[in-house]
Picture 1: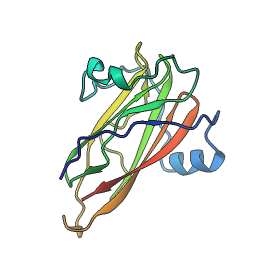
Picture 2: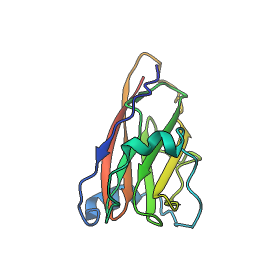
Picture 3: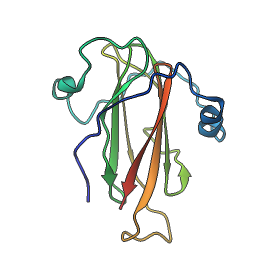
Length: 153
């Protein structure tokens, strides 16, 4: 079952991730940021505009699109709003730990301040569709970090 209702949250405005967050999130991979355009969000920017803050962000980010739950093999899209040109990284800890799925690469926010990632939730051997699993998503953007959870069912 796939939930299409997004979670909208304003991220805490901690200036930088803590050492434990950074170490945990980067301990198995060291991505290098490159100026690649952000992936196209599932919804057009016009459809997400009502979720944008009324004033530009000085730092931090706002989640515009993120599912609360996904099914095995479903596509997952997360879209955030931050400052234009901000470094954006996402880490997905799914059924097999830290995911290296295509679509989770670091990005640079576009001229509208949008970063968006889309990837597929995999099924691992030994897991059945009847066993829900809590996955986590860690996002680093605009000088802040936040962790979110979703259910894989």
